[in-house]
Image (tube, rainbow, N blue to C red; front, side, top):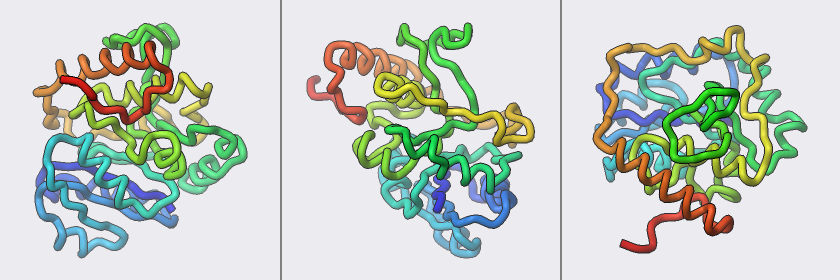
Length: 237
């Protein structure tokens, strides 16, 4: 089973397209979790395979996604934004890929359908304090086994609030395993695997500096101690 987790603070009608883009992929074993501080119990109950999870902390998308992960029943957990529509995936090929021998041999069983490079990977540099190449795990799909065994039971490190958290996941995994997080053959058009629903979508920039500094801190801590847990929180002031 695949659990799709959508974190949202939007009005429910604005995320319907995201929900139905999953349903349009075709018949497969799945559930959709909508995590929000707004009570969408009734709305979710009216749609098959959709459950509402209350975000009772409302501290940002990082904690909300992790709340969904803890409630997930699937063998795989796929994080989605509330303002993107998942498109152009052949769901049968996708499931075959997730269950393939190639994937099962990996320690970090994870996949990102939206290719983004980290520092100087493939000649592209993003603003990041990490001076090594890595893959940004944008909207990752991760085996529950990997979440529990390698990531401390969460997908995102909760020292972050919104941004750069996918950089930390990609960098951390790359230090323990050389993996191929992207398979272009899974999509009719890789560039259109996600369709943005609203070009004027809300983006919270409040914690940009905090999240950048958090990535810098974790990177330096990891260089000093490669036994640093992925989900390590601050131990000092």
